[in-house]
Image (cartoon, rainbow, N blue to C red; front, side, top):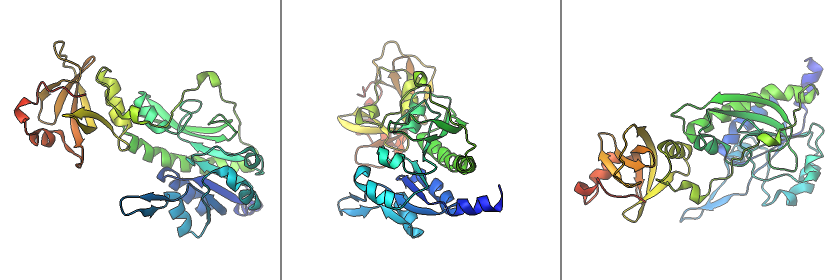
Length: 321
């Protein structure tokens, strides 16, 4: 790449679209290396009893760098405003809306998305959670061209990471966020000079990482210990999974499995109190909860939770729902 090429890249008019913390390292790298003409992010939210205004992490970063910020409820309503900015390239990451065709077709260099999976696996809005919940051994980042469908555009580049047996959605989120920024910076020069590859996705290999719903958070003790263990890791640190104990919600944040088996106990029945937690009978054995959160309280060790129960002596044999 010569100096003229670098000058052209510096003058590029880029619009970035994103919302959550995951997108922040990507926007940071774009600000360092290119001209970001505007940012598009989700509208501010009103949160808490005091009805405080909460802006997205991307809006905060854009404001700190005096970058124009657009926050349409629906991206279709901002089409004209976006096109008036004459973007050469649009980059999205976890923005949350599918772009209309008028926007997709406008930029000279296209509309590029940074997606947190190895497409065509885990298309959708929760690929990080689902990778762990589904028991995947690896995942990664895909840089792709966008089209009018959900994560079905042509693949430009990919980079993978291993998923360890102790990985949580929180730790994997942080790894992939940094990897996404790195891979995008490595990929952009080839996009700008037209030397990048472009691979059509194989729809027959597609899986989906749909947004987490409330029913995904409920522990089903009729499932295997590995399925429940993966669910707990995959929903840590948001939104968490839960069961019902004494008619109250008990969130479960950390656990491990054992080789114990209790054929004469019910699924969901508390089996033992250990030094670091309490065991629960599941379909094919036992899972031990080590960190929990009773309804209306903070996260605590499972032993502290047991010690705080009024009927502590009758914990073993109690059935969780």
